[in-house]
Length: 378
Image (cartoon, rainbow, N blue to C red; front, side):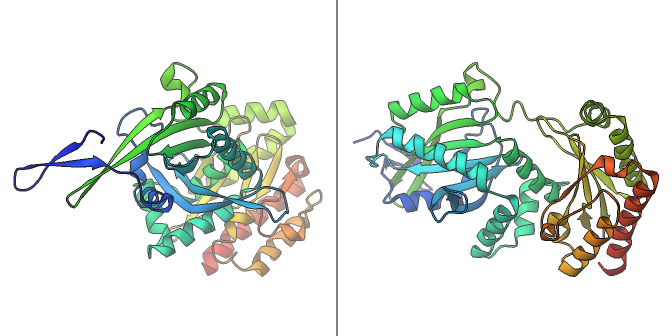
């Protein structure tokens, strides 16, 4: 029998509670979904301060366009928008440890290739509805005062694109073999990281207790490279962005970017600056009646992207006809040819298409029209 934990009850007596295996893997998973703080240790051994559950049983397509789909136990995100993949196993699981690790790598590689932030957002909303909570309220509580909900989803999207994720193995007992494999893989990683966490259960006389412990932590904590929290990228600045854009696309593209930036100074409430590891981005954000609108993003690669993906979530552009009208107005500008099937995505155009003064003036006029339409109908 394992050594007990002693709990002092209301009568002043010590009550021993003993470790007990989880009755089923599903019960174990339910507990982690309901109480993600069990994956925290309250110290610097975990590279995150909080986790938000997007969904249980996140689908992972194994082949593009195919019917083969696997399911990840839990998909969380931390407050920096880092997707956190969690696989749960009981000590009684007899599968080979190498098989468990291979399964996680399978989920991670295929998930990064196939997931998109819109689907993840819908999964989160469904998760909230299942527990009869309002998604916006749950997210606002998680992000805290001043949190930017739309910016948060954009950060998740950016992390997926940069393959910046976290993989967490959870069990009531982490075997020595699994520890070694996870620690080895963790040391080889640069943009991602692995953890192994034990969550032991103790039960006795109406009392249930859980004891989490990080068994394998990110390599930074072991003297290696920095973990995702330690190396969290800073937002791009205007100077850095323009320097990189000049190197990649030339002075003319910089001139176009500055024109859009100047437009934002006069119309936007604020700017959103990306935190991409290699590619920078910015977008003017204007707020109307408490709702943020992101019409266009500019990238250091020399392209602009129309944000139908986000506009479609807000009136009046939640109407496909209004988005089509926006697309048609943009396509009247020489050098811009956005496809009709992009009304729910982020179609791009070359910044150099706006080098001619007339084209640039027309583009900024379309942005003016977007603002006017929002103020008129939203």
